[in-house]
Image (cartoon, rainbow, N blue to C red; front, side, top):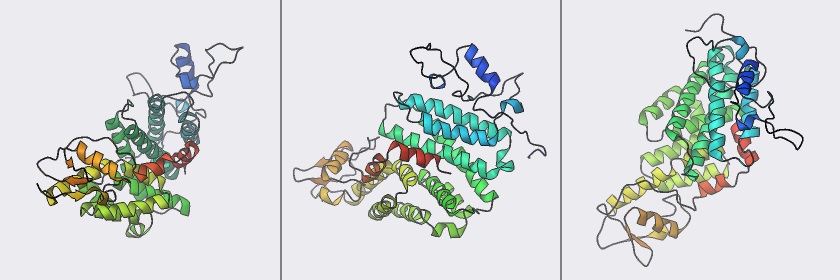
Length: 359
């Protein structure tokens, strides 16, 4: 139950002065929090302007709700903007290094928001912060799929994504799903679409969304298209699912496409498995040139490579021998040539920042 007099933060910098002094004294500042030294400066060039409050669990004897150490709502939003515009594509830094820093600082932002009960005091600002967090988590999962070598804990990333999405749905419901600005409504529709795509195989979550989200939202894009994709997948109609995904590409529903890309490999696997049961034969084969549109691929060579990795036989004439006995279920690398990945890959760094940072 909410307190009658919620705590109001008074810190107007990205990091409280006391924390900056402590971390600076004990050499605990992150490399992103140090200014680049010039030829006249030493390597230890520290400034509080670059320091961002790190996440800390509450411990005995420590007061995490001290208003002096809690950032104001506007400062929290400013901090998120700074992380995306300045840190996300930091020159010379590897993405897993960047991810760890941003993930921790976003967690701290959310902690400050919870302590101040922003979901009640300033719900629209809190919604804006959580939406930015979700977009970053989804983008990070996409990067991890592209680069399997990245040391990103996807389980934890997914857990935080789901926590934010559940809170957002409750907050949307709390404001009656009413948003004055059309542009902001469009992006809220996109976040619900992302929620659905990330839980495409979870019927309980999908049913919960269908029940809680008002009916007039489902008639608007991109929700209408995403619902069509999910129903097509549910009925094993992968040709229709691919067709509808092209609409998302042409309309540049970028954050929705990024979320959809996380499910493409699982959909490919399900489609091949279905064909192995429906077209299983020792003598007949299936022309590979008919399959790219079923498997979210662009070329016959990608189809044969995928099928062979799943234990199936490909004839010299580019035909696939589907067999439920030969099919091997295993994790497969993302096949090249998928136009969904191509559309996302064409986005510039500034466009990605704009997607993550949009109000």
